[in-house]
Image (cartoon, one colour):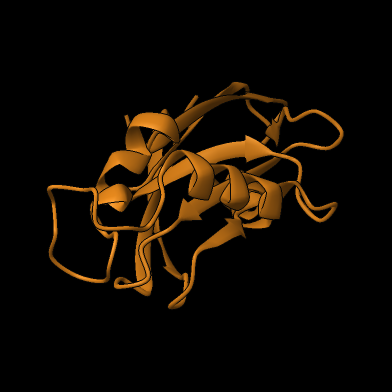
Length: 140
């Protein structure tokens, strides 16, 4: 099964502020090695209770707009029952219900099949956890 399924863990420094981290180049580099020109599926998974994976446009303000929308939907205040960590940290634990911790994307001829403006991104609103792991898995 080693040539059918390949996986790798990325260590991502997301910092101490809310952020959207573009992982597209990392995904493409992984697929150059793992897919070797084959068709299949790429699964991106973040094994954290306070982060998610989004497929969005970046660089034109959409990543900041996403963080603004999440702030509106999930304010960083004291309404949350989950209360350890930074003020409003309980909202970070609700984030994966809105921005899921995974995405599965098509791979054709070894290349990620994204739309023109789409990027694969880690969404991290948790200021208390500056380091994340992201698992990339290719199933050919």
